[in-house]
Image 1: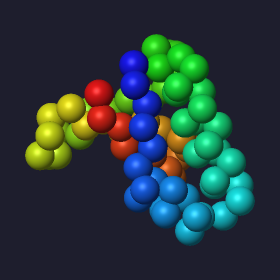
Image 2 (image 1 turned 60 degrees about the horizontal axis):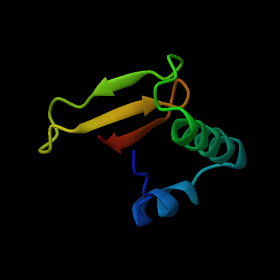
Image 3 (image 1 turned 90 degrees about the vertical axis):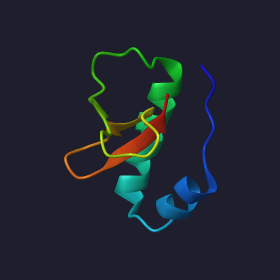
Image 4 (image 1 turned 180 degrees about the vertical axis):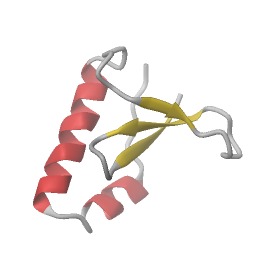
Length: 68
């Protein structure tokens, strides 16, 4: 699986608190190590123009959008 981080990801990350940044970075790193981890909460984004978009739960307030 190929992983790429968009410019908008890093721009958005810089606007968050240190704790939020740490949680997101940890989730992104863990996702790269093992995307099959059952601890991830994937949700298909049904209304996206591209049907390959999913979101992954970081915590109760933050999700990372991914393209499969």
